[in-house]
Picture 1 (cartoon, rainbow, N blue to C red):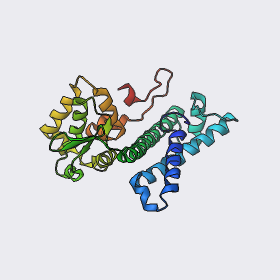
Picture 2: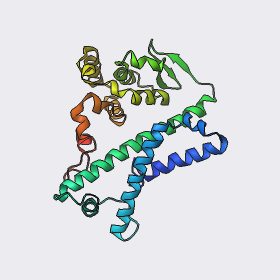
Picture 3: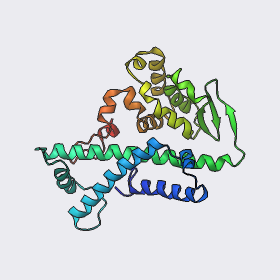
Picture 4: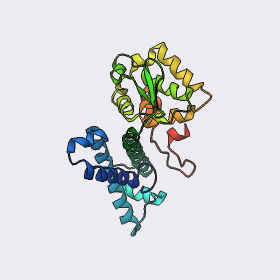
Length: 253
């Protein structure tokens, strides 16, 4: 829980970056350029959960220990969920909460780092080109030409991942567009899923010969895949407590 994705080191990285940034920009509102208020709240919520886990882990081990090993999972789960009669169910609940928190922290960390990277490259002469009427590319990152178009064209939420498959030279998604995707994922509802346009886009993504797995993983991290496939959303971060399943259900899937 220290060095793995979504662990303490990711939290430290964000704090170090913000600390360095605050030395150069003393105005508090400047932080909004690199981390939003909702991201900060989400980070704080999950940060305290990771801290609690580490405290209990050290207490159970009687020494410094950052590996959430099987025997520690049982004792910690029973302490956190004393009303659950089934220890295995308690462990699965513990690990589900941990993996969801780690996924959130990892995603926020990636977005914050991306924001800083863009601020650095922005100072240099970057390469920019129009991809089509909805997207453009700046320094090998795809972004919406008009972020507000998501409200009118919700299908762009899926289309952007298809574009990334079609253009392997692109390195990712611009941080502002990433945030717009997260803010608007509520648009993915039953009516969204029934639209032929969206079904066609998702099938096109699955048939892509390049980077399909990479984009599905990116969609999962942003919570978009779980919204589009509710069944997948339910198993994201789920853990089966046995010696044969070392990955979460969504990772196996």
